[in-house]
Length: 241
Image (cartoon, rainbow, N blue to C red; front, side, top):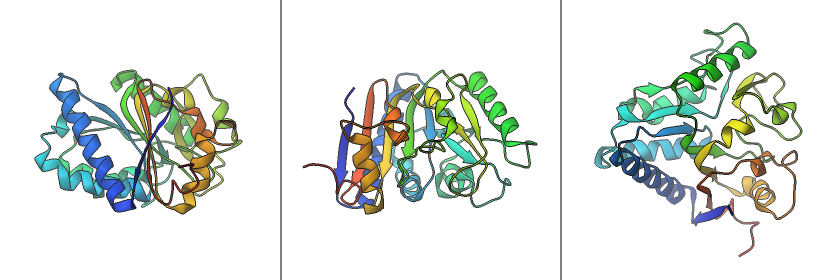
């Protein structure tokens, strides 16, 4: 399926549009009797989206006790580290909206090694996941990485597991747990979030007709029903049109 691009003028309007679309999707899924399964991402634009979700949620009708939440990747650090995606998400919106089904990657407080953390998270996905995500949100690095799957990294080749331990991340912290490409591709809707000119080259490479997943891992994830690139003017600045 050809990816769709949705362009907005700036990061503020982009975050508001993504938050509104997410809440609308959750309302529709719950109206069908579903408990939506959503995978969150970290980063600056994700934080802005999360804060907009908290602001818009009271009027949305979403029952957050009936939303199952995951993370596409996590840093293997102490539970109270500011580097943890879950800590940022809790501060931005999870606690405010009353989310109760939040599945986190074990921290260094909970697991003896990053490999143990990855195995435990994969077990949790199997026992509490539905087999696919209804919405998977992914940030995109300036190098084209998604989750903690970096260009040329061996973790890109892991196809027989849901989660993989990353022990030599090219950006700190070096130890992380990431969903694999195989697991990321089990999503109905994949939403890429990118803001700012610093992401423009990576966005252009990810959406180019030619290129490889090894060079630009974002090329390797597609939704079963839709793939949407949510962009502002800066991140879309190297795209045609």
